[in-house]
Length: 141
Image 1 (cartoon, rainbow, N blue to C red):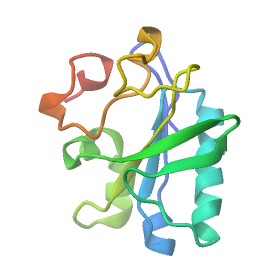
Image 2: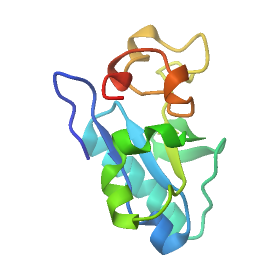
Image 3: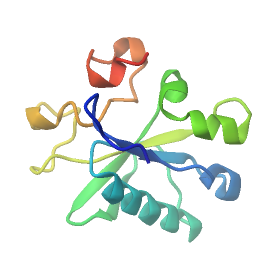
């Protein structure tokens, strides 16, 4: 877990799902780090129990009352956000999925209705870094 600070929101990610379950690792951004840890642990528990995680999948029972969507992370973001995982695996990039949460109206970042005040809270890692809108998530590229 990486806590938010004056540079930007925090994020959390898993290390070990690929090693233990051959499931993509998961990452989540922009919420309280404790809440993100709870969400990632819930998804990890589902995977450990036999569930599959794949890009485009909508998942329930992660954030109370709201679905989340799993999106494939472009490899261009790995070094910026997942250095610990890269050091652990010491191999070419393994799959990562971003756990994308909706706005209070149920819309997601790719929907024009998504609340403007949420737009900078989670990056769009399914986009290549060069295609991502400039902002807090691109400052360390």
